[in-house]
Length: 288
Image (tube, rainbow, N blue to C red):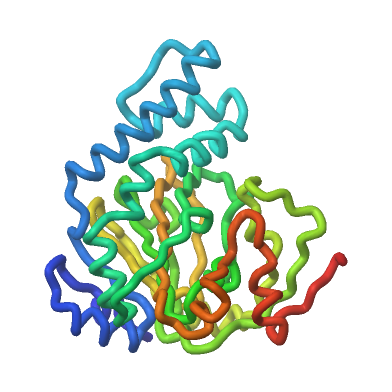
């Protein structure tokens, strides 16, 4: 089994070391990459949106803590969490995350490329409350959901530390060299519902994946994980008493020939069948 330390580095590690680890394992963890004050600013921006929503619902007791405010919000209706996610993705601070030079440098080093593309529609902000398993992902690859360059990458970092009880990210190092076939069913899917994971069923040998899996835990405030879009990974159940807040921009290589030749078309809100369109040999479509 691969040791997590084999692909873990401190901020400032040489690009060549990151590239070699990324090519070998499909995942890199960089400790202390994001400044604590920058994360505090991001939490504050999230909290302002939570406060606005709570005030509109007549809730006058606003906390300085995002978990306290989210707990109060979902007591009105669990769907309000999705309202917050949508508002976050349309906030200037989220666009600043997509434009963060540190994330660009990390992605360029891992992907060994010069020109990045990042598509807003498939950049994610996740809120996973305790014991709310509806949006948990089982073993999957991101490429089928994103369809950027073949060597694209997902960034994953928390706004607060992620402990074992909070449901850490689990990866299969070295699983990033093949495309996993999927069964696809858009019949009852509603874009923006937060349930895109239910559209695709991945044909994965789960026992083999679990045998080779590495649990990324703990991930502290300031740590950043970057993994290949073809790497098998899953989220775990949150059994703590607070939510898991994670930021997930995606970056692709604009020079990838197939990506460029199709005019850099990827998955967007209006092109969610892009994987089936461009990789039909890996797809069984049902419900049509």
